[in-house]
Length: 256
Image (cartoon, rainbow, N blue to C red; front, side):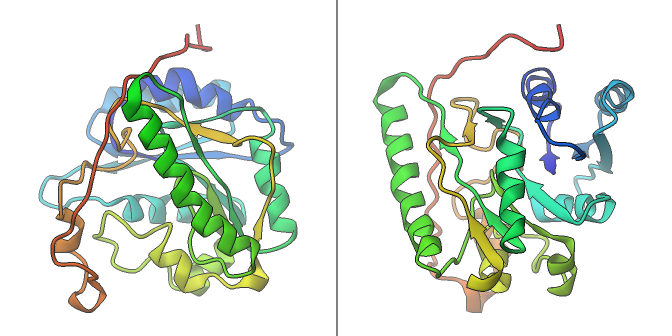
């Protein structure tokens, strides 16, 4: 399931073919497009004629009623036809055709699957710092999951079942731009229902460059998410958020 908040043709031409080419017997790719570009949505529907695995859903963008990633995911979850759900973002691509099968194997051991997403190597010292920070930050929650105390996931690569989602009454605070991979997961997660996999390499990689959101969510400025967080849940009044940029590259389009 992929929320799409922009007319990201790079995703459609470069990453979507890698997802529909996954070696797995039966699956669907649910794309929730939030926007007003009818031509772009028609292109998604047209692609479905060649690849029936794709299910495209559109949410009309209205400036008076902002749509958060959790709202988009909620619509996508309701439109999904399968019980087991995997989530990623448009700025992430699988490193092999076995990413889906590797993540799906986790559902044999639990109702929640936690996966790691690496960072694409870019030029410059900034890219090194970003990749180092991402690895050090991921070591914390991955080691907790290995020790039987999982508390969060990574929005680029995680999954759970529809039964678990609706049993918990879905996401809370739908107007927040954050929380689907940490606040919600910490509320529903339990050691007995979670699974993780030890892999020699990251099953998916986040693209370098093109900003921090990669079209997966509305841009968030410093402190903006805290405007929607209940006062009792705030941990800091300053709301310090950092966004880093680095140069990246683009591969040729598999559609051509």
